[in-house]
Length: 182
Image (cartoon, rainbow, N blue to C red; front, side, top):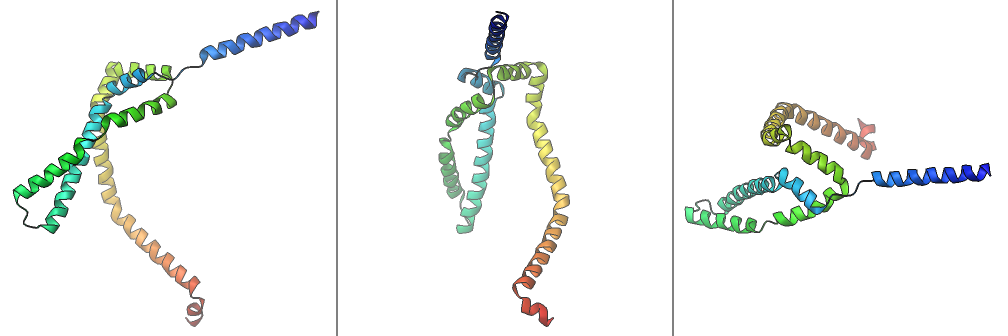
């Protein structure tokens, strides 16, 4: 009898523990939750900035290529070229990209994760971080570029030396007769 009561108690305890664990399991955020987060993070505006940067870069490249073919391009010809670039980017699929991102966020974050992140970015500190982040990124990229420009000549020289050494070693291995005659 004691064994039966002990077994029933153990089963009841395990069942309660299993139910409690199931209650703790968090669900994926809804599409609206993710879109709210994306709005707060100004994802659309950042994507628009990215597209503008890509467009500007493409215009510069297209104009350089055009000037190679037509060195004395007229302002009218360059305006037509500019119009072509604008047309290409007119239908850039920002909405489609955002739609594709929603399930990614849903797979990687739980509803409570997203609620906590939204709470942070809605706070004054989170808002300040959002406001300052583009400038911080630009300054960080500039600092990184400055460091790389200082280091690049040495890195290139080391790479050139290593490539020459490797080529010399490979020639010795592939031409053993040359090694004997030296």
